[in-house]
Amino acid sequence: MPSNESFPPMSSHASSPSSSPSSSPSSPLPAGEPSGAVASFAPVTPPPRLRLSDMVYEQLETMVVEGRLAPGSALPSERDLAQQMGVSRPSLREALLRLESRGLIVGRAGGGYLVANASQPLLAEPLSQLMSRHSKTVDDVLEMREVLEAKAVELAAERATPEDIARLAQALEALEAAFAAGRDGLDGEGDARGQSLLTRVPELDAHFHLALAEATHNLVLVHLMHAIFELLRGSVVDNYRAIVGHGADLAELIDQHRRIFNAVASHDVSSAQRSLREHLTFIRNHSGDV
Image (cartoon, rainbow, N blue to C red; front, side, top):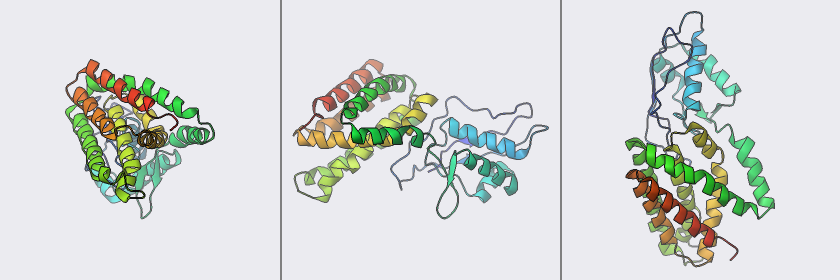
């Protein structure tokens, strides 16, 4: 699921690639679901006294750091990537091996590379282990979301581009469709559709909030949300189970996402903040012990 960004040719006066501040990271979907975007790489012209592989490395590194290739995104094959960038395969391979040694990309089964979620093992995994041993951390995760997402929704409402809004709409439509497909099975013990409401729907819920963070165009915030995504997803799953256990209206929870989206899409900052606050308050009020 590569990004649709392209690399500009390197200037002969610069040692690092230039990038557009309006470039927006792709919102990764659950595993196995392509984003639909296609990467395009422009030819590379190295400045004097720099190796071609260094310039290839810097361009790829910049794209990863800026989020234009999000964690989980697939790079093109070596042949296609070398052709798009106008470099030899040995120069490209040297750059790719350097990226892999830095932990920025990982090899995948069958060949090729995926962009790594480099900070997740350092941040999310220890936190997940902590949560499994201490129940209080469930409330702590919700407090963290209140801090991060309050600012995220404000920035998203201010900065979201038409492309960001389209990705948010796609994430919201997937969430609403999964909820509609699963709600009829909610009362059936062990029913696959009912189970979808407690697994698939929360996962899509978490992806909606990730897309919201990406619409902020704050690189640090975007990378942080990617790093803790599994922690966020696990928390959302637990929240859904608690909400259902309390007998609360799950449809109201889904509708809250629509209100957040409408506010962001219309660039209404105060409405976006209010809608997010109501959403997190609803979760807090219905996610305690059943």
